[in-house]
Amino acid sequence: MLFRKVLISVLITLSVLFLSFQIFTMEVEAAGIRALLIVLLTILYYTSVQKKQFFFLTFLITFSIAEVLNFIGWLVPIIPNNNVDIMYYVANSLYIISYTLLVAQILSAMHFKEIIKKFPLHILVLIILDVFCVMVVTNTAISRLNYHEYYMEMVYNAVIMILLTVAVINYINKDDKKAINLLIGSIFIFFSEVIQLAYFYISDINLLNVMCSFFLVLAFVFFYLQSKLKYEPQEAFSNSDLRI
Picture 1 (cartoon, rainbow, N blue to C red):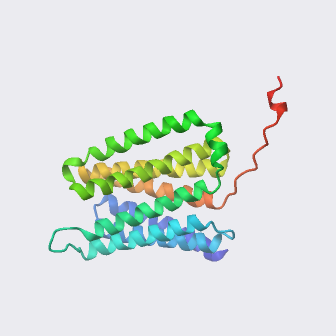
Picture 2: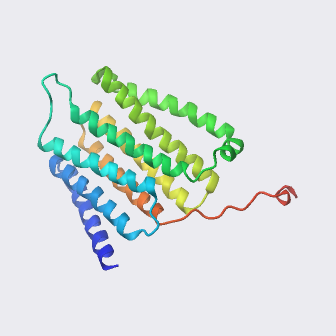
C-alpha cells in the first residue's frame, strides 16, 4: 500500500515535470521523463491490480519499449547512409502494436454478433467517418512524407481511429464507468495524436506540443483508472421491456 502511494506521488511529480519540460522546449529531457512515466505506470499497474488484463498489460509494456527507444533516438540519432530513419519505423511499429493490443483488450469483452445486431447503423456510420478522418488527417502531411512514411502514418492513424470507434461502441453497449473511462482515454489519445501530427508536419508552435503531451498524460490516467474497474452486469433483455 505504501509502495503504491509513493509510486503514485512520483508519477504525479514526474507528470508536472514532463509538462514543464515541454513548455520550456526541453525535448530530450521531456522524452526521458515521458519514457520513465510509462515504465513506472506499467509497474504501478502490475503491482497494484490483482486481476491483470493480459492485453492491457502487454499494451503498457509495448508502449514502454517504444518510449524508451524514442528516448534513445533523441540521445543517439540512428540514420543509415541511405537516409532511412530506422528508429522512426521501429518506434511507430511498436506504437501501432501497442494500440492494437488496447483494441484487442476492449474487443475481448464484446460479443460481436450481439453488437452487430444492436448497432448496425452506428457501426456503418463510424466506419465511414473513420475512413474519411484517416484520409484527411494523413493527407495533411502528404507533402512532408515519402512513400513509405505516408503508408506508415496511414496505418498509424487507422489504428487510432479503430481504437476510438471500438471504445465508442463499447460505451454505447455497456454504458458503465469502465467503458466511459476507456472512451475518455481513447478520445484523449486521438486528440494527442492529431495534435502531434500537426506539430510535426504543419506548424512547430510549442503550444501544440504541450497540448499533445497534456492529452497523453490524461489518456493514461483514464486508462489506469479503467484497469481497476470491472464492467457492470448488464440486464438481460426480456419481453417485459416491450410492455408500456
